Amino acid sequence: MERVQPDEVYNLGAISFVPMSWEQAELTAEVTGMGVLRMLEAIRVCSGVSRSSGSGGQIRFYQASSSEMFGQVSETPQNERTAFHPRSPYGVAKAYGHFLTQNYRESYGMFAVSGILFNHESPRRGAEFVTRKVSLGVARIKLGLASELRLGNLEARRDWGYAGDYVKAMQLMLQAGKPEDYVIGTGRMKSVRELVEAAFSAAGLDWERYVVTDQTLHRPAEVDLLCADPKKARVQLGWEPRVSFDELVAMMVEADLRLLTDGGDPHDDSSWP
Image 1 (cartoon, rainbow, N blue to C red):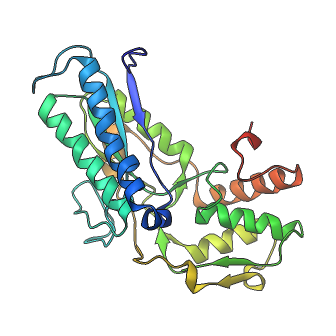
Image 2 (image 1 turned 90 degrees about the horizontal axis):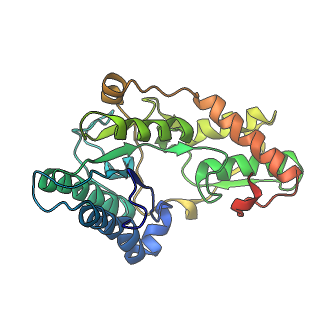
């Protein structure tokens, strides 16, 4: 941080696969939680900030907070004032980083903000995440490389959007006149079942012929209902999602069909240009 002296820092680092956070709870706390503290301290020291009014050059800091902090929701949709009730070690660690970012902003006058992002997907999503698991599964079935797709809870609902739209929201937060936290999402919920239907439809397949539900793939504590209220971002940042749910799903299926046709490895980032 001292050598580079950046104008902006975007902390996207985390153990972000939620099921893994039960298996690696301590690692999740270190990376997803304590990692935020280390970033904030590095910025504070390198900026010369030592009192509540702030001093030195302002390095603007973005923290990737998560809708998983809401967990067992108290209201739907969720906005910046909705209480947190995380249901996984990942959600708990993200809540710690969120409150810490807020604390450094209030304690030191740092330009530090959190974006409470709902699920954001793209063709580059990790293969272990349900959206990519579905798009890869559909592509494999379409190409004759698999005969079924095993999934857990088909009724879990999420607010899924396109990652590219959400990165634009991150950038807008750090260009704003004052540091504030924002909920970022589409405001529309879709179930895993609807995700599956859209993905198989994009490939011209009947999903009911191929999908098998597997109880072992359910989470220990499920989060069933997450939906964003992005009004603040729309009004104050002028942000709107541009890519629809169906366009996003079709984009991912088409990308995985190309990837597998060309012999690419879904688990290898270098397979992408």
